[in-house]
Amino acid sequence: MLSLRNLSRAYKTRAGFTHVLQQVNLDIPAGDFVTLMGPSGAGKSTLLSILGLYDHEWEGEYRLDGTEVHKLGVRERAALNKKHVGFVFQQFHLLDDLTVAENLDIPLSYRDVKKSEREALVADTLDRFGIVGTKDLYPAQLSGGQQQLVAIARAVIAKPSLLLADEPTGNLHTDQGRQIMELFRRLHGEGTTIVQVTHNEEWAGYGSRIVRLKDGWMER
Ligand code: ADP
Ligand code: MG
Image (cartoon, rainbow, N blue to C red; front, top):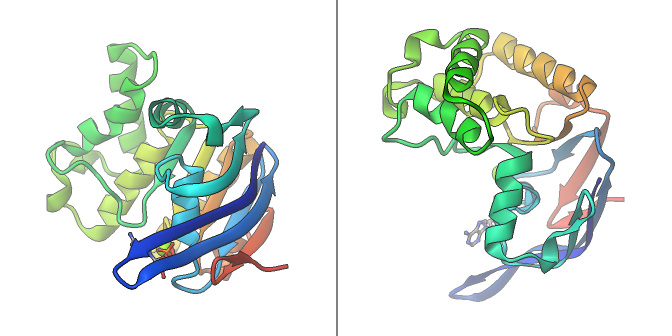
């Protein structure tokens, strides 16, 4: 269960404060599959990075599975993130000086998984995503679509209980996008809580409900 109460986020700019999220209230039961939609600039990425415990410059209350995130320090939030969250960044954020296989190993290294098991999981994931041929390449050597597949693979490899995906299929072909949505549907069936951002109505249909964000406000 994830709940936000009166959550606000403002960016300080030279012109003053830009209020991006204002008094957002949101409840997402465990195991829900929510699609967050709204125009560009509405605050979708900002909201997702707060949910993923990457952004701390907000006010209000955030509860995650009984933990009061607003009362935690940055280190404790990072620990919670590593334990529970898988995140597909809109701009991928792969680690440039690590190979694809090494990027996929990172989330596993945060868990208590043996080296041999980690290697097997990475090999299996490369295979499932059809990216075995890229395993020793660096992100800069990949196409945008390949980088996005690696970003999704990295987000799901450690079986996070909370999967957050920011336009995860934006760089993929339609049939690849559909495969990713089938994967999300399967993870949802296994109890993963998912919040995805998309502009695609078909992909939104894979979720159980749509939440619309407009100018930093939840639409009612
Ligand atoms: P969306 O993902 O819905 O397109 P974002 O969350 O990326 O929207 O951005 C929402 C608003 O916050 C936009 O007006 C954007 O310009 C502003 N914004 C985002 N990041 C920053 C930043 N680091 N500094 C200042 N303004 C920002
Ligand atoms: Mg965005």
